[in-house]
Image (cartoon, rainbow, N blue to C red; front, side, top):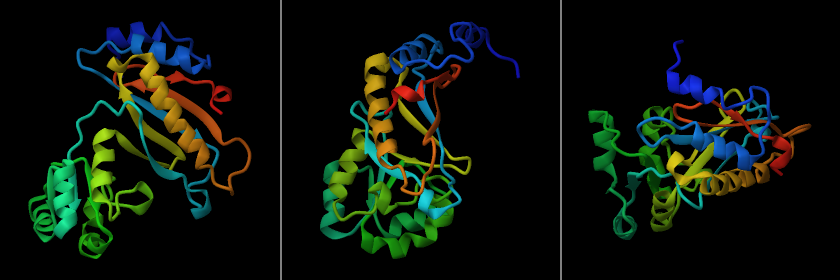
Amino acid sequence: MIKSKKYVDSVKLIEKNKMYDPEEAFGLVCQTSKAKFDETVELHVRLGVDSRHADQQVRGAIVLPHGTGKSVRVLVFAKGDRATAAKEAGAEYVGDADLIEKITKENWFEFDVVIATPDMMASIGRLGRVLGPKGLMPNPKAGTVTMDVAKAVTEAKAGKIEYRLDKTNIIHCPIGKASFGPEKLRENFDTLMGAIIKAKPAAAKGQYIKSCVVASTMGPGIKVNGAKLG
């Protein structure tokens, strides 16, 4: 793969095998973010668990103190008063059978977060095959299946993110934009890592945080010292 000159220059700023303290790591993330657009900063955490076992799953949701820097479009499946509450809270799309049909027949996905009241789950269950692979299916653990749709919409707009293990036991999450600066990125990072550490399964043995890497969209990965995380 051919690397750009900016990427090559950024790599020179980083010591390949060094584990950086969080403060230094986020300073470097901002320094190595050289694209013409505001790059997203992502966190990649490898955990010492086995996602194949139900008792070693790590999943949850957290509102980042400074949000993600991304404008979020929210779709809510609800009826009656709760549909009204969702609209008043700022949801872009609110409905029930009409939205299910639109997604099914038109392959429509002009939204980033899906929230539903519990009574709607039976109706939208058939959307699992299209929403699931995109990570959009409402889930009680992520707080997206709830009677308090107004609160869920407000949190989604404020920068609530869901974290979950992939098949390789790694959590990938956005924690802001390069324009946030090191301090705000560090605060978002601390909040997310705190949630991940708190979610440690009882069945997990040995070292829990195996590795932690932060990187901007077009920048190189920077290893964070796991000993400084808890």
